[in-house]
Length: 281
Image 1 (cartoon, helix red, strand yellow):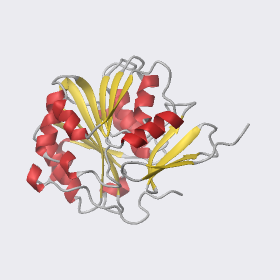
Image 2 (tube, one colour; image 1 turned 90 degrees about the vertical axis):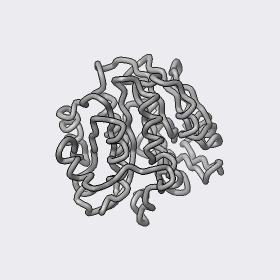
Image 3 (spheres, one colour; image 1 turned 90 degrees about the horizontal axis):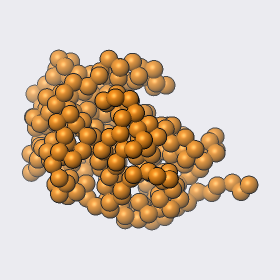
């Protein structure tokens, strides 16, 4: 049996590499310009290697009835890790994936084929443009994991964008986003303040070291009109290899402080990560 070899391709927005994992037979790491983007195990699509992906998975697990199909809009595609996860954990889910990098999408489906029978539609398009054109009340979940390089694009951070997300979600819908920041958390606080204008319920999931300002890192934002099962979420995230904290209610309002919602004209990308923040190894 021949050993899998790395695959590299220049895409619309950078150089993408798919590298086999020596410890798992059919698992692959996707990097773009050297920054890790996604991890996929073709034999175990429900295995989530990256901590932030596992936290997103935990939220998806606690929504509604276990195993119930969901209509999900993914903004940002990567190697399609979470769409594959939902195909296994919530069979019958209908999923749309919007990814601006057409060549990256082509590379991923060519090298890492989607499971047979998966109801996953791929759309090479800008995330906000697609969201603005999407029908209202059409999604149970929106998962936003969009990074231009290592930064969340500015046009996906404003109140107008948050309101479009609220329009597309159904009454019981949930918005999830992978964000990244460090102390003093100007970006993260502004995002929480922005989504608090549109959604009554907010939850933030991150490692304690990140929340204490000791290092740059990912934080998962959860926004909805109805309470999320934070008790189960706290239990699941505390049991991970790198435990996370689940913040909500008064503690989260205190964290937001005096931060204000972001207007389109004032929107900026998330901060540039320090060297080595998301490196490999």
